[in-house]
Length: 270
Image (cartoon, rainbow, N blue to C red):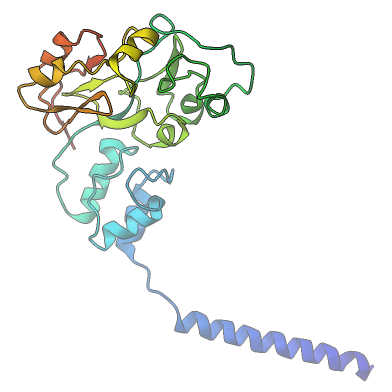
């Protein structure tokens, strides 16, 4: 009997000692709860998309509680979340410009064509592995919908072979940007600006052969812009949204119709 009891006693004693050590460690290393941080975390949507620039909602809440971030970084949460965060922080949000993802390609089936028939995996990532995809434009949207598949807000549709994003539904979560193997999607102001719907970096003559609405780097938009908001980068016109006043002059002079004018709306107030 003693042969059984002694091992049981030893094991029980070790368990008791370990329990005491753990209890003491909990007391010694206990970190006081930051009520503000907890409140901020509860106000966030919890999707951990990283659009705020931090490691998920926990990281963003901690940064706000420590005064290292403002209440305007959570684009998926919208105005309701910004208002809740500002009330917890005791600050005014002020004016917030709505942003949305935008596909920098307008090369639908009507304006461009394919260089080959692709029978592989029906994803943009898979198609891109084979000579940059089946489209004639190696920079353009392939239309297999990798971005549409990851969008949790039903903001993306494939229309005539090109992904289209509804700015009213888009919350700027950045998931579509990560999903696009062509790096075609950018977060831009959803209103009061003009956007170039092309990413082709070839020279003008090469672009004309494969797409009727591609930027041919003619520089007409650059010359006509009264704000000097447009520059040519890698043979593609780029519009600085900080300088653009959405006057529409670049839209009028573009011979390829590849510049899109976003609707003029008032800045959203929270």
